[in-house]
Length: 299
Image (cartoon, rainbow, N blue to C red; front, side, top):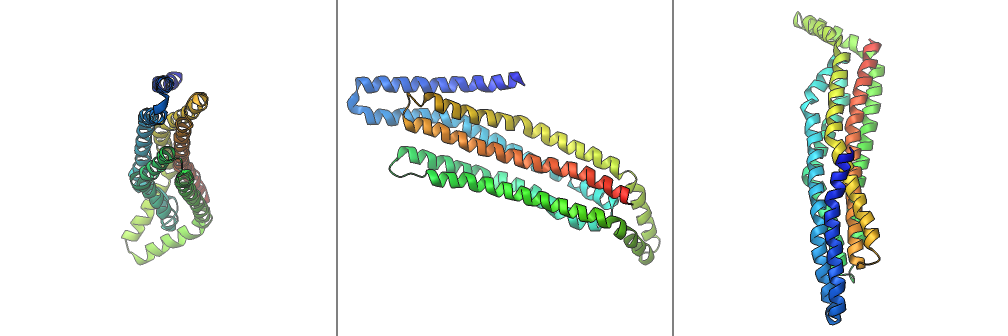
């Protein structure tokens, strides 16, 4: 872990050192050519901006791929989850769980493909515009873009967690009441095949608890492995931007230090979004293991 952190800080140290060098050259040119001070400021800002945005864009693309991978990983085991809920209780469980899980997984993929990159890029573009044209500030608008994205993800994850918790609790409470009548109804109305189907469900139900632990553990391990390092990296990069903005503020133009601070804010929002989505998937896995065990105990 220390080597991972050192590699991130080392790569950023060279970038930030280049920005400091550009600022020092700009200060020297201002001293030698005071009549061109305004143009020198703009030149220093644009050159520094090219160094600032490279790691930020790379990290946004990396996290975008991570969120997409979490969604596709969840969808890959979705049929197994459906089978576990079916054998653990009855067909009623499919109505409680499938829509929420499916919608959230597809929502994470849609977020990574359609919303995440455009909104964060728009926020950064508005921040750059505010620094280039200080008389026309877009800082509030860029903040709205960041907070809108964060709010959408937070509200969606909270709603999803509440929905599966309430649905799972109701399903567990009703599983003992509804499973036997439904199975008897199938046996009575579908000769031979109905009996075979219900007996198969009972026999599979004996192994459902173990299967839920295996599937849930695999999903937790996958999400943890995929999301942990990129989230930590995003956090370190965001804090590095903000620390560097504070360090160079006494010698740099306000536009440069403010731009570094704005990029840090954008990456902190990205870090929070990644954590919320990863937590929602991990919560789903833990809840899956718990509710299936409770369903099996209720039988």
